[in-house]
Amino acid sequence: MRSFRVKMSENIDKLKTLVELNQSTAARNIFCIHPAGGGVSYYEGIAKELSDVAKVYALDDPVIYDDFDYRSLPELAEYHLETIQEVQESGRYTLFGYCSGGPLAYEIAKQLILEGKEVERVVMFGSKIVTGFDSTVPEKYLFLRDYLGARFGLQLTSLDWPSFESRGIPKVSKAIVDLLVEQKVEGISNNIHWVDRSIQALVMMREAQKRYRAGNSSMDIDLYQWNYADSEAAAKTAPWCDWERLTTGRLNMFRPPKKVEDHLDIMFVPYLAETVKKVKAYSLACS
Image (cartoon, rainbow, N blue to C red; front, side, top):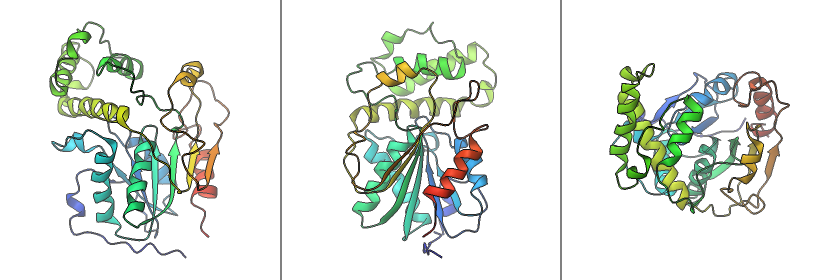
């Protein structure tokens, strides 16, 4: 049985961004990294199904919980690195990354390796094509109109988006939240602070992504792909890395499952069981 030599810090209960996703007593730890804008609920289903083989933690975006500010993905990765090492001081590290959390997980793994640590594997879900890494896009905030509209059905076209470009992130976020309150969007009144901080986190990570250039590594990477609602648009998206040269280690790409109706996300039903089966068989197979 592989030993992971875990050090549980006395400060672990004070780690604001750390979320325990299952109550496993397994020796292996898995650290799941948030995507842009924060939120770790994407991992809840797989964490439950992996309880027999791993203790699963998630790391949420610190911008939501603290007055944390950063300009680059390496800076954000360093923050998470410190949290991870409060939980696990040594041993072999396994990181999960969902969507835009995949590149961030990769950067954290690179920093672990630079510190002389051993990374067993980085596992990415839906991270082959990730928007937000195109440095030629001049607008800082306009993507919010389309992203929040498509994902949550929010009507934000009445806002003066060109004028936002001269404003700071907190003011833009407040303007959006004020409109949502005015529109009486369901649940907004009880979650104003969380929505405000999540929007700020989304913009901050997007800007950091534009500056990011993924260096090469020798780590093992598993990439579980999913289907896209608009495959043509996805194909035109600028890649966040050169997949052919990203690593000299093992790169395993798993094809998307056969599409079931309009369902796309492999972390949820009806694909979750298949995803768990593959992850256990390939990504977490014990030697």
